[in-house]
Image (cartoon, rainbow, N blue to C red; front, top):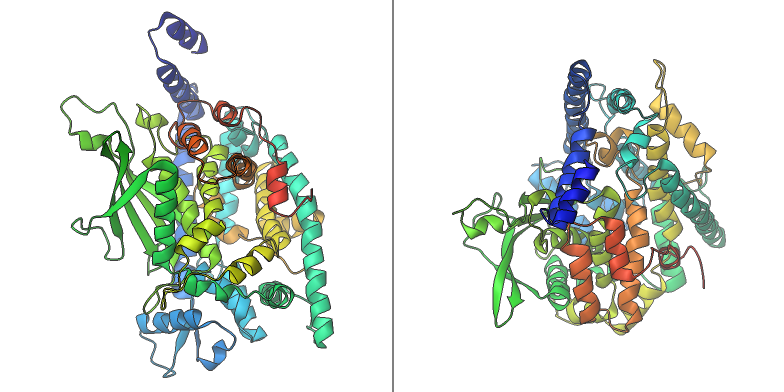
Length: 580
């Protein structure tokens, strides 16, 4: 195939994009068993059918646990919690028709409710109840045992890899990535892990010293249901900063307008509400997205924003497309068929009036908006190569890059306004926020990196015997790599949807960290100009990061933008893991 591609390019019969299309289609067909004999194809098809069923079962089990579990509390039980969390818990009780006790409040297993509860609820016993349920999603009912489902998935993936001549699923999966091998991905993660583990241990020691100074002691020491609570207390004591001070300035409306403004300044996009377009749910906002083109502007996308958690909606946050950008539509087709329809989903708590976001929530909104830009700014001829149809360890670059702007002072001063008074966020609050920004970064990096390491390790195994115990593997592997006391994986195996509700991120959870190297390096290019909205840098970013899709290999795209290979020092520095 590659010889034919070179001949077609040399003769001018194919454009570079057509050659790339042929190459990517060929690779996909080979990876989908096109070269197998009839009997092997039949076995491969059977594996794929079984996997499809098991992946669906795994996701449904997690959703059912999240839907059914609840902790009914009184307002007094929520002592220490901020008003917006108490309001959200009260609303959850009303939505679930809870009338006993009269002031019923309900904590559910949505992350946007669980993490604030673990950060602020004073009662340790209630924090433990919520944490135990949250960390055991996928195995809360005897009828829903996701660990057994996951092991079946692992065995099928191993056989899938064997049929492709690979020793492990990790080897098969990484063959078509920027990393190329599990060893290359592990080299990055191990470097980060050693630094993050040291940082997390220092953070725990700081909390222990804080408790000692207060004359307090915890039975069993700092446990996973304690970490966020005492980390928040240390943050307040050390930096005079309480994250809840930020929330009144970070209403959902304000953060959304900030995202739109950043989008406009960088890429010339403007968002026009289309209330006349009826979406699939009343909470979904629809926008017409236009971009300046000479003296006029042109329609580039339809954007749907689905921000609130609700019953039966999947947890988490994600971007999807109802229609992907393309240019090669059928002759006579309406031009609208070329225009993408992009959907961003979040799961924020719906408050009684304004919905107030934590800074992490605001980052999530910007993250998904970055994915949205990858779809909205796409400029490929063929849908197959358009938008987010890129290698997995490149796909998180556009999303994580967008996160940087929400923390910029110029953006906060323009859009972070008090939801009641309209007061602009005070400079003093921004300064205290900036000073504490890297606090607890060791914990956050350990929580994520442990997931990525275990993902690669479990998919690198060459055998899953009849007695393979995934929970035991998790326990022993975390002990082997020196998991700091008081922290667990952000996603334990029984609810690790990235791994077992889809195959896309299996042996691929590392991609977020791989992309952190890229996004911090790209943002440094803006910083080096002295203007985070530098128009020349933004145009190169649009051209090489957001618009090109998979029409050019990602390694080449990065070199086109930066003029060199990626440098991990920017990521390590920005996460407080090295100092200059």
